[in-house]
Image 1 (cartoon, rainbow, N blue to C red):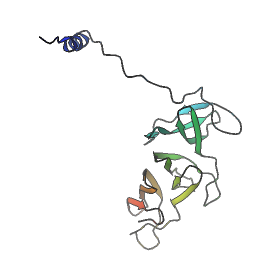
Image 2 (image 1 turned 120 degrees about the vertical axis):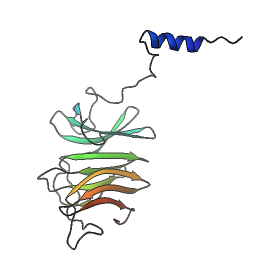
Image 3 (image 1 turned 90 degrees about the horizontal axis):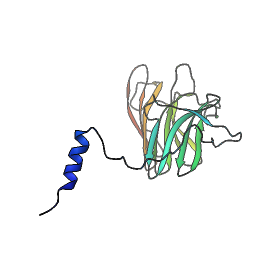
Image 4 (image 1 turned 90 degrees about the vertical axis):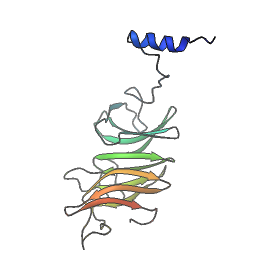
Length: 187
């Protein structure tokens, strides 16, 4: 006769409103963590109302957070190491102005795709960080593939990255759609 202790314990836990102990949780980053920057400061807030404020790939965790100066940033954590991807006050590579507000981000194979989009901000766009360099994929000066003559992007969201290719949702005052950057051109 086989003992049936496990189903009995599960039934008892359920009956008394108890749950088995959860898997081991590990703190990745919190308000006591030091930002990777020239002037050490702590994280103040972890942005939770964004489309993708946290993403995970192969042990690397990308997340959005604010520092004590209320500056937004995207960071990558692995084990106890934290790397800065970009901050909203960093200089955007095309316009030479600050990035502004981050909408979302995704990490895959160590690369982070992210978008910026905020009312009144000139530097709206989609970008790819390869671990050291940020490439502009599209911005408000980029013609929309398949759009009307002269139609350019005005908004960006829902980015993802795979093998160096970036997909995102983009729109204008006239239309919108899902667009793919294949590593060299926008489709």
